[in-house]
Image 1 (cartoon, one colour):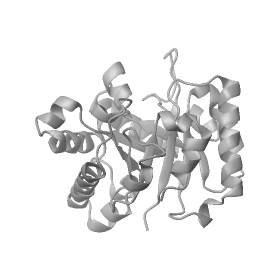
Image 2 (cartoon, rainbow, N blue to C red):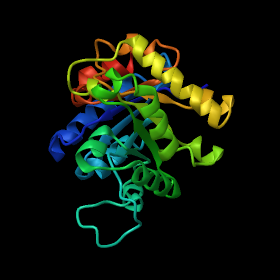
Image 3 (cartoon, rainbow, N blue to C red):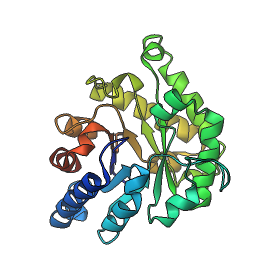
Length: 257
């Protein structure tokens, strides 16, 4: 049975003190509501700015099913790359996950599929689990190119991996037109794309790999719509943006399976 995951992406928000407070509130919720006892038995991840990562990873370390991750990593092991953070540095904080290819990294920082393939490779080398993001912008959706766009992103970013390597990756589908806009893909639209992603994974690898791959929905998922989205057969959880900054909302989403 594939893993259900609720992942919070804090983006560039919260001071160190605020981040520690939020992670402590989420930790207290999970301790009082063990994830193995919740429907879906979800795993809960917090993707934080780098300043929070060590404290949040330490905070989560003694709670089963609760973990931390970085929002980005560099393609190189180390060197003269001022302002960047390596996979080895992330791993040394106690975090075990990293976002790769978030739509904001693609659009604002020009990250290409080739760069994201390199980031995936170095993350796996350092035993970090990549949460690989893919998705189309509004013009691509309106032009009915959304399936082609997502297929190309996965082919160039991930489908060079061996079967064993690919099995360590989580995919997050982001309809970019629904991120931070208040517009959410309908549960039917989310299911359609998630089912398509699972189909092309099966064509590249096999049905077992496809059925075991966790595919998250990331596009204005919140406490009000999470249950309806998560009820879809191929939606295995969410990559949550704004709603992950409020403990009550995020904890409601955790219980939404």
